[in-house]
Image (cartoon, rainbow over all chains, first blue to last red; front, side):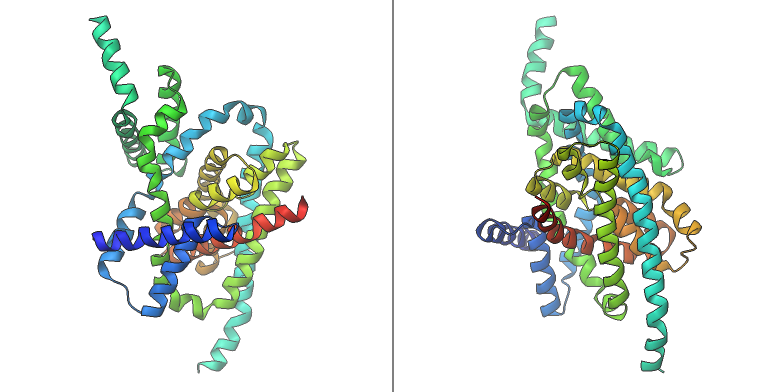
Length: 121
Length: 239
């Protein structure tokens, strides 16, 4: 358990260092995620304990958003002043994104399926 | 007696223990409300916890910085949790390979639509520049969205709120929109939830179907990565 938690933190640390040194416009933990993914992909195995650490972190994932969410208290003025663009972008923007993504994926899947059937009779 | 209570408050309010514990309590209250009232997506536990905490901070006159001294221990775990997204992603490697091209096409289109629609609509409704930058990464999972927001000059705290609200919105209206658009392919429904409304959308998709849940988790991770790569470049081009 401790070893796998250390592994995750190590990936994050390397990610943070890469971000700082190269000035890449990507958050450190995202680079850490790519590093860990590549490691798993190359080693072709998944340590059971790593899965349980990830399971623990992801079971409480919503809780981890709370402290940052409370930060809204520092921007209440801007939020109240800009409620219209905020609500519009969030509600209409999300509806458009869901519709377009779903439609494009469904169409692309239908186009690809006949090819796959030919390749795998 | 009154002096004792004041002294106790002074002691507690400067120790990280108080707000760390209250944050955990507020979240568990949110989970309880969510379960007690039929898992309605609008009663999202994060939303409840944030509302309760904001009211408590306002009532006690506590500064966000003082609150964060305690809450930072929870906040810190977002980093490792992001790194650990590699694990569900790795589990789906076989599925990614099989539907690689459709995933890639819908991911790129969906990711761009998410950014452009958020910025475009906010701009049309008179949003100021800092608000547009704050809203641009709203469809991405919180740790990534906050990192991007900070990088491009938005307000990370407000981005976090927009992300949570976007997730809840997706979970509430997603099925309605997809049924109306006649998207019945479960992989497509999963991609839509993951790209548009990240973890909260994924949790919703998982309740409906295992396939759409897996694709939503994949879409969430890939969209986080793609937006982190694309958005800073797009913003620097527009500058």
